[in-house]
Length: 200
Image 1 (cartoon, one colour):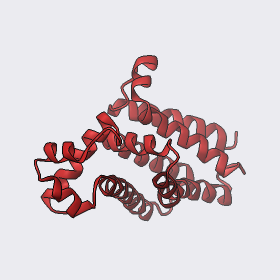
Image 2 (image 1 turned 60 degrees about the vertical axis):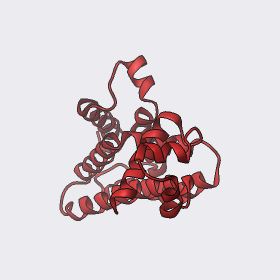
Image 3 (image 1 turned 90 degrees about the vertical axis):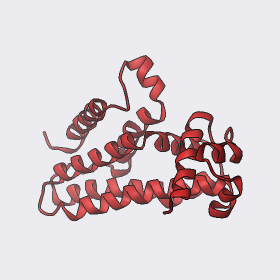
């Protein structure tokens, strides 16, 4: 991707995070990116195209990393595979916190974009987690749990702190953008999963 596109996307990501998608204008994006407004229409066909490109890039990068991890996970126990997958999801969200927050804010509003993101990407998010748990159930390493219920509980724990960082800071006195928090959250999630998935 050329430098102009990268500058536009970077500027948009910052502005969307601060002002929201609706509260950000093409003129503001152009000003922060130091480009002519016409270039946003040329490269992305407008603000909506910028948002769609940010979302697509975010998820495609995440799923590429997930695929690379899965290719390295042969012959290791299901619980260890699941722990590595959870760590990847959490680390990625922390490293891309503004986009993570933006995406999940947009998903909370009924719209055509939200429906498309859920169909194209959130179903793959669910599948990436479900596949590991299902493999553990089939191999007998995990208890025969409801996979959908388990993934929903995991997803809630993984997404909430990055969607509501101010709440986490003010109410729980934790810093969701820190490496220490990611490790703490991963430990908490794996503790829940150990109790849910592993035989006593």
